[in-house]
Amino acid sequence: MTSSPVDPQKLDKLAEVAVKVGLRLEKGQDLLITAPIAALPLVRSITRHAYKAGAGLVTTFYNDEEATLARYANAPDESFDRAAGWLYEGMARAFEANTARLAIVGDNPLLLSGEDAAKVARANRANSTAYKPALEKIANFDVNWNIVSYPSLSWARQVFPDLGEIEAQQALADAIFAASRVDVADPVAAWEEHNAALARRSAWLNGQRFSALHFTGPGTDLTVGLADGHEWHGGQSTAKNGITCNPNIPTEEVFTTPHALRVEGHVSSTKPLSHQGTLIEDIRVRFEGGRIVEAQASRGAEVLNKVLDTDEGARRLGEVALVPHSSPISKSGVLFLNTLFDENASCHIALGQCYSKCFVDGAHLTPEQIKAQGGNSSLIHIDWMIGSDKVDIDGVNADGSRVPVMRKGEWA
Image (tube, rainbow, N blue to C red; front, side):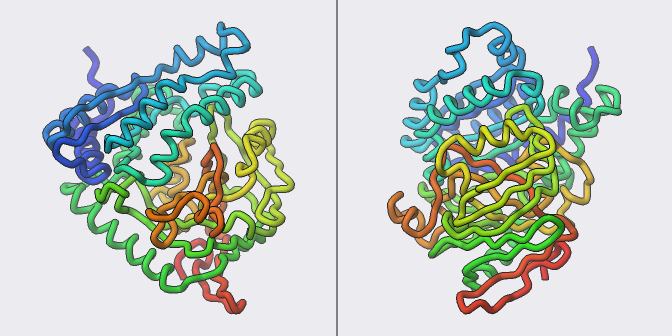
């Protein structure tokens, strides 16, 4: 029997970090996990640590790449306008009952690159619509939630196409473990130190109370107005259920909510975006009045434009995030083809849904109040990278005065 190229001890450390740092499960709290079948070793380890932490009931839903492809090869056309709404309604009810949420990602990021783009877009739209009741509970931070990754072979082949299968999977595993801070003696302590550093950045930005951020660089001259009463966050955050958790592992960002109507100018992506099986490269968009009015890409343009047509909010921003170019993920030089990692290598913006927690007293604001303060609403939330060592960022005050925030991709 061939041993796995994924180090079992580091994988167990990742599982422990997911439970103790990512989720901070409370005794008696249920846990809902979604994962690719390939991630079974990580699911089993997380389940074990969750029960050791006192979890009430751990339930896992698996997805399978072969089953996904079988749909595109054999399903009737009308199948692509449907989604399992009953499942997402059940998830929403689980979150209402204080069930924690953990998503394990690890599928082949280019799985659907050879499929009909129109069918992919229809299926994504149906899924986004059905998922909205559950997504709102996550976006509004009702419960503690977390995302971690498993280095599947199908993903590793895409990231390291020039390596053999064993070497590729081992290389991806090592990159994930390093980025997730589990390749050290005490990962939990390492995360405490990292969270403290991100909290200091957030506190400085919240003290500045900028009205906008101005990004300049090659192909970029973009002013992102910030929502009224916006609040910066980074690292760990406290959910409405009172549990302080780390939603993303890894994370290097501090982020907040832009004003949906106050984004002007043009911006170019600095890294490819892997979205639902398609690689979208060299994105270039222009904003007027907060809305994307022109969009181009050298590859994947058809998919990009279908995403932008998802709904009215899909052409507006729901997040702006600052990440230094010297972040560990950036320095690794690895393009993960996975937003969870690639967004933490670079400053980025997100199309679509905003996070209610990125407002002062956001937990007590109604959707109408969030909209009135500039928060965006959409079925989607898609991050893409606009930062590099050639991008400068200024904070713009209400009186028009400026404060350097980043120079050549580093904190100023």
